[in-house]
Amino acid sequence: MNLLYGEIVEIFSQDGMRMGKVRIAGAVKNIPLELLTDVQSGDRVLVCDGVAVSKVTTSADSKIDSVSRDSRQVD
Image 1 (cartoon, rainbow, N blue to C red):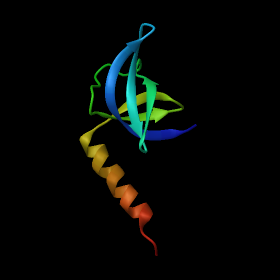
Image 2: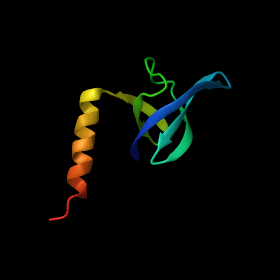
Image 3: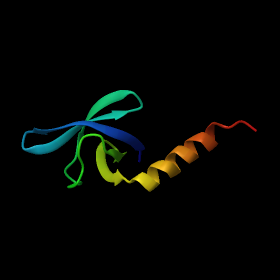
Image 4: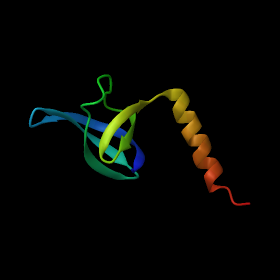
């Protein structure tokens, strides 16, 4: 299972499915958004194996940034 965080750049429909262009680590990928009903461009999402599974809230954003900073520190 691969879990990644990304930012929705654009939302569109493809073959009747709600999709989003999601920026993940600098790359933009087309990701299904069918599991999420309340996302829009600019929102951050958690992507599992190529499918957006959760919207990331503001309080979670600060925790993610905190963990990212901690993981880059060298003892």
